[in-house]
Image 1 (cartoon, rainbow, N blue to C red):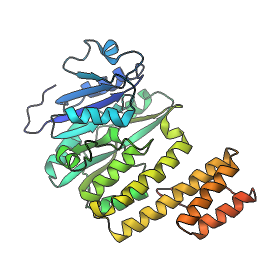
Image 2 (cartoon, one colour):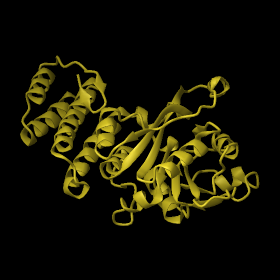
Image 3 (cartoon, helix red, strand yellow):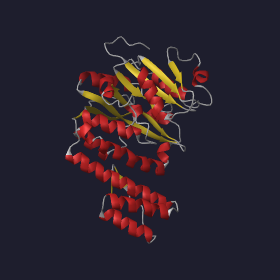
Image 4 (tube, helix red, strand yellow):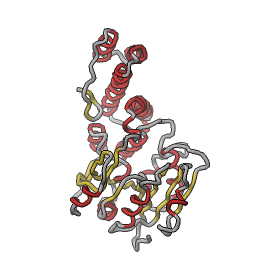
Length: 322
């Protein structure tokens, strides 16, 4: 796995009950044009230990195992504490990389030393097979777009689904600067930990963006991203946390105002989902609390519609509603 290079690239794979997919993920790592220098799997107390699944099929991989299930944030933090590379990829145990990804992102980062991260596009696969997608994929020569500090955060807040860990190479020194209380990923969040980390990264660093798809992202029926109630409740918590760090992150007045709108929007979306699930009382209570915290015509109108049983779910793009 060792690459003869001045810089090393580490891959951290959190895994929990991924026995059906992890070997396919590891196969895609083994097929990389630029091999990883270090691969660390953090087994988050799976029912079948990852070591029993992988066995000797992938020599050189380091496997750590939690004694209890602690969640993906803790698994990533455990792996991050052990990495020795200059660049880090947090790869989910059910995603697949195209062969040119590590090489392309690595070269882009080495050519742009001011960039803290390189984010790539990806294909989405909804409960299906990745083989047809990969068969149609053609290797690409990519000129990454430079996202200056601040501008990158603006882009991401408007396109929060554009970047995900499995297709993001992060500079270790930039990550070290984001560690707080021995945590890189915030463990107080039930979800949106990626959003929280990437927002902090982009607030403090220049970044690179390669729009070309560099792998396959699987959305499965039990995916946390499909638990919309949990997602929107934790989005509000994540945005509130970022606002609490505004001075530390040197957020501009524009970004603070944008995040305030995003926070209120997340509360309203959560309230809509509660009402759609037949919990009108909880929805109204949520909206009333938000109205007292930050008076808003949108919140007041939604509260009135909710109490009258007339609210309708709106469409959301990025962090705002329309």
